[in-house]
Every structure is written in structure tokens, then in C-alpha cells.
Amino acid sequence: MTERIKYSIVVPLYNEEEVVLESYKRLKAVMDSLSEPYELIFVNDGSRDRTAFIVKEICSRDKNVKLINFARNFGHQIAITAGMDYASGEAIVVIDGDLQDPPEVIPKMIEKWREGYDVVYGKRAERKGETFFKKFTAKMFYRFLRRMTDVDIPLDTGDFRLIDRKVCDALKLVNERNRFVRGLISWLGFRQTGVEFVREKRFAGVTKYPLKKMLKLAFDGIASFSYKPLKLSSYTGVALSGLSFIYLLVVVVERIFFKESTQPGWASIIAVNLFFNGIILLMLGIIGEYIGRIYDEAKGRPLYIINDTENFDDDDKLGRYPTRSR
Image (cartoon, rainbow, N blue to C red; front, side, top):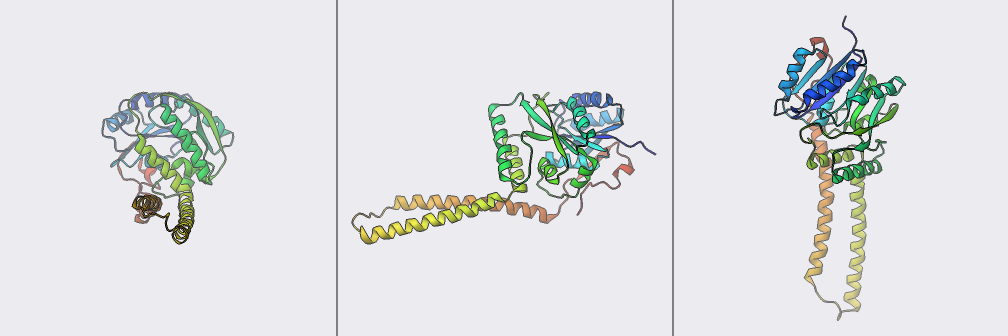
């Protein structure tokens, strides 16, 4: 009978050849110090560099290290999901491979877990090596998201967190395609607490979350947990309709009682038309984003496709969710 694994560390990777070896060394040092069974699950999210090759070499030397190799790039949130699907530990820790989230915080999370908390998230007390724009927009996003949703998503947190086995199993019941994992975990409930830490600069390489991806993640978070943008569109439409009716009355009154003062002007008509058409297109765009997400859900495609794995026994794969079929 195989020994029950106590901890599973899930590490999503995308083009991290410069940092993956150092990430492994620091994670191994931390987990070995606990003197309890563990597994390191690296999820290669379709990297185009030597990331997968380096992890396979590590797997050949260390059986505690496992690899899930995607058939293509499916995205950071999906990589996290796959790692948790395959994790077999009683506690699962999600941490990025760029070493901005220090592995040395994991024992503090485990202490909180042993106290009875089901979710222990890392709360960023300070963010090193990031521009003012990145810090400011991140701060505003988390506060805006809290105002927009009914889910209590902790401020200044990322995906760096520890979750209990029962939380992981509950998360497997959620089949959303456009995923915002930290929001989903908050939505599940359970006892949650935070551990503060200083977020470091990247050890090497460049960020895998440029502005375009950050904006998509932000809208995924808002669209997944709030209908307020749709309500705002409705309220805006009603308000503009009211203003239009008032303006119509003004035009009629001027035409009847102040004929000499009224001058036909194409410029004002075009300006008003452009303004209202812009508002309409904005509202249609918001509605279209929600419809697009409905379309993604209706197709029912698997969240991810796995090319190959390393160091997973056949028994480990049984009962897992490689396609998360409905």
C-alpha cells in the first residue's frame, strides 16, 4: 500500500526555462524540511522553450516531482485547475514558478491549515519590482471587483494559496470555462484566512501576464461573479431615454414658441447621434461578452488536453479529471 501524500504543490509553468530549476530547488528545500510526504506537480502550459525538457530531467531524478504536459497553451487558470485535478494530497498549495511568491511562506500556510482553516491565501503586504502603473491598476481592480460582486474576494491576493482536500474536491464540481480560480475558491465558502508576505521580483525572465492578459483576467473575474455590468447597461439605457425625451420636449417648445431663434444645425444632430450610438455600442459590447461566455459553456469542450505526464502511476490517473467531462 502506497503512503498517503500529505501535501501537493501545484506549479503552473509557461516558458520558464530560466527559473524552473531554481524554483524546484527552493520548493524541495522547503518541503524536505517538513519531513512529511509531498509531491511537486509542475504543469507545463504549452511552453515553447525548454521548460518541459528540464522538468522531465528533474522527474527522472526525483520521483516526488510530477509533470503534466499540455498539448498546447490553455492558460494560467486552466493550468492551475489541471494541477489541482491531479493532486492527491490532503492539502494543496498553488504557487507560480517565477518565485515572486516565496516558497518559504508555505510552512506558515500549513500552520494555519493545522489550526483548522480550509483555505489559506497569501496576502501581498508589499510588491517589489513592479511599476507604479501595475501596482495602481492591481489595487484598483481588486477594490472595484469587491464592489461589483457579492462574493467576498480578499483584497491584494493572487492564486498563491493552500486549500484543503475537501475544497479541492468541491472545486472539481465547477466546470466554468472562463475561470477566475481565486474567485471560485472564495465563492465555495469554507473557513478562510490570510498570511501576509512580501512579493519579490521575478527571479528571471519576463512576466507572462502582459496588459492584454491582465485585462482579460479582470473581465473574467467581473463577468463570472457579477451581473452588474448588464444592469448598468439597462440603467444607462433608461437614463438616456429619459434625457432624450426631455430634449425632444425642449426642441418642440422652441419650435412652437421661439421659431425665429431656432436654427437648423447638422452639427448638433450629428454630435447627439454619435453620443447615443457610442453608448448603444458599448452596451452591446458588454452584452456580447456575456453571450460569448454562454457560447463557450454551451460547446462543452474539455478544459484542457494533456499530451503526456511523468511520474504518475496508473492508479493515480484513475478517477482524475483529464477532460473534466460533465
